[in-house]
Amino acid sequence: MDALVRPVVDPGFTAAALAFLFGGVALGTVSGLIPGIHANNFALLLAGVAPGLHADPLLIGVAIVGAGVVHSFLDIVPALALGVPDAATAVAALPGHRLVVAGRGREALRLSAVGSGLAVALAVPLAVPITWLMVRAYPHVRANLPLILGGIVAGLVLTESSRRSAVGGFCSFLASAALGVATLDVDPAAPLDTGGMLAPLFSGLFGAPVLVDALGGEGVPPQSDARLTMGRRDLGVSATAGSLAGAVVGYIPGVSAAIAAVAALPLVPRREADRGFVVATSGANTATTVFALFALVALGTPRTGVTVALEEAAVPLALPILLTAVATAAICGFTLVLLVGDRYLRVVGTADYTTLSVGVLCLLVVVSYAFAGAVGVGVFVVAALLGLVPPRLGARRVHLMGVLIGPLLL
Image (cartoon, rainbow, N blue to C red; front, top):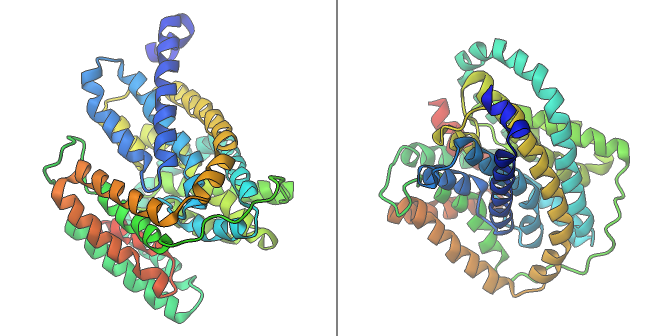
């Protein structure tokens, strides 16, 4: 109860909370705008250094949540400019790139921001009844988790566009599952105490391959105005689909926003498929933060890197304060997309793609070493080679989420 009333009666705590929140916003901005870097890296880093800060754990939680939310708004920016999505936005790259090629990249940025903002606004009221249902259904979900995950894998494979793509997707799933089984439980010596195998795995599977494919790219073509051409009804339907997809991520282990976005695709109006998919994917990515917080409070199970960091930092689960941090960070994220996005497209999109790609690849190697040592660099290389496979077989990279689903199935 004390954690709930302090912001009202203690101006000092409120000022400190705002300072930590804006610190988290800054970290989320950095991670969101650097391709291949995920908010989970900074979240776990914050959890690791929390004891040395001698700060109220709730303040650390505010910073962690702020970083995660802002990252989920901004990670679409490098995905559009460089084609380097992280695990959460990998599915949105192709529709987003089609809009960029058509000169509608500025519109795509705003669609993503609106989708994320609407999804957060919808997620808070939706989280209450959905959490009530999940608390009662979770024992059945846990008991039948292999069947549920198997059904998800089958759905991803069967929704591919051709038999060749389906076979390629299934083979990619099996290979990434084997990689996950072999590496996820490894505890390598690394410079960072909060290290782990997720950083090199996801940087390799979802970041490096697109960088390699971008070598020698011609950059972003001239972009036209930022006017939204998507109807309000279609925009609302797509954002709602994204918010509901975020609920799936928040409550079912092993399901990412990329997978949930594929599941939400049938709800996206066909006449606005590309725009609707960007909205839904961005919405799922951001709404996951809200649903994962409710899942952590109600079920005691962390479902995302951000909630794992909250648990590791022993953050009090003062939901009103953490949701206030989510809302404030969402406003910051929306504003930052508008302020930074267009300039990022213009500056980065006209730079030398070969130099940028090589530079970011080197950065991902450094990150992999920092979080997982020399073993992490080796895993990064193997994951990067595997990440090149699905597109060459005509399949989506989302099948590489087998790196998490496979070990869970076993």
